[in-house]
Length: 202
Ligand SMILES: Cc1cc2nc3c(=O)[nH]c(=O)nc-3n(C[C@H](O)[C@H](O)[C@H](O)COP(=O)(O)O)c2cc1C
Image 1 (tube, rainbow, N blue to C red):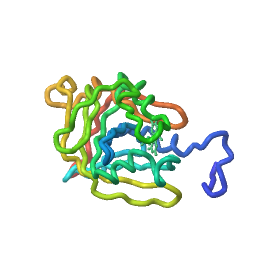
Image 2 (image 1 turned 60 degrees about the horizontal axis):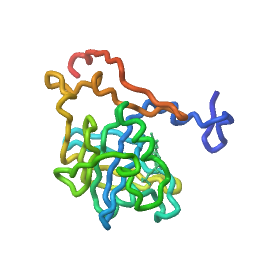
Image 3 (image 1 turned 60 degrees about the vertical axis):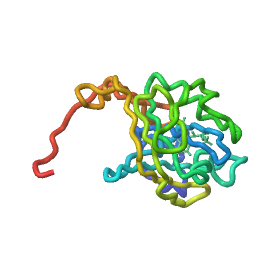
C-alpha cells in the first residue's frame, strides 16, 4: 500500500510509529520554577551527537492546564535542565504509571512509588536505582510543524551508571535489558546482541 498522511491511511490504527520502531524511551525528570517535580516517558527520544554528547526528545500535543505543551517541556522552559533516566524491565510498571495525564504539579515520583536522588550537575532529581541517567542542560527548543510539537535538545553534563551494569568496563545491555517502544501498545526488550565489523576505513 501507499498513502499520503494528508489523505489518511485507511487502516484500523496509525502505522507510523510502528514503522519507526523500536524507539528508546527517555524517562525524563524535571523540576518547575516553583520546585515541584515531574517525571514522564518520551519515546520520540534519541542521542544526536558525541562531542559534546547531546540528546533530543519531542513533545507532541498539549495538556489543558499547560500553556500549549506538556509539563515536561513547560518545566524545562522554566528551569533549563532535565534528566533522562533509562527504562528497563524492572521499571516498566513505574514508567507506565508516570505517563498518565495527571494535573500540573502532580509528582510522578510519588505517584509511581519511586525514590529520587539529587543530580550532580543540574538542579533536578533523578530516579534512584535505574541502570543509567543523563543529566542535561537545555541547548535549544525547536518548534515543529503542527500544534504543540516541540523538540528539546540538551547537552549531557553528567552521566550516572549503576556499578553492576558494567561488565569488564562495558555497559552490559544484556544484563541491563533496556525497554523500547514499538507501535500501538507494544514494547520490546533487548535480550540478544550481535556484533558486526564496520567496513575497513570507517
Ligand atoms: C512509552 C511512552 C512513550 C511516550 N512518548 C511520548 C513522546 O515521545 N512524546 C510525547 O509528547 N508524549 C509521549 N508519551 C506520552 C506522555 O508520557 C504523556 O503525555 C505524559 O502525560 C506527559 O507527561 P508530562 O505532562 O508530565 O510531561 C509517551 C508515553 C509512553 C507510555
